[in-house]
Image (cartoon, rainbow, N blue to C red; front, top):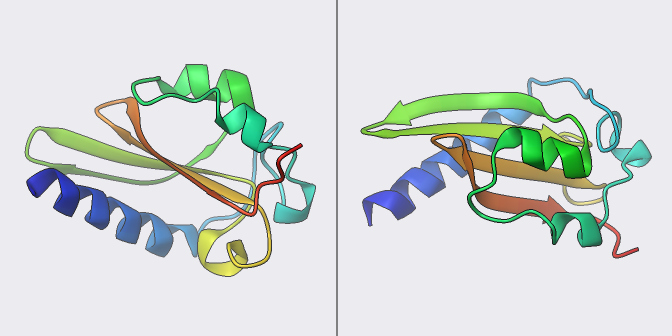
Amino acid sequence: MLRRLIQLLACSALMSALAACSSSGDKGGGSASACTITLAQLDQIAVGMDLPAVEGIIGKGRKDSEYTAGAETNTGYAWCGDVERDYLDNPVVEITFVNGKVDIVQPYNIPAN
């Protein structure tokens, strides 16, 4: 139950922090309309991967949040756009890392091809 609460807090923190972030990055970075990340690439990302492995697949992300709760450090990264602004209509990818390893991958409007 504590882990689920931490995940919910991480998602909430990511959404708030993304509102203040500007877009940047390589392959998957930049504006939401320029996003080149596909679901096939996201399928290659597995729980437990580290950031360099993820960035090798989808390009450089931007760190948008970080907090520690107990023994867990949660760090949020985003690719393509701003979740609060773009997730309904444009591509956005959020990935939460716990202690440096992928825990949650959240794609919004990512094309299958």
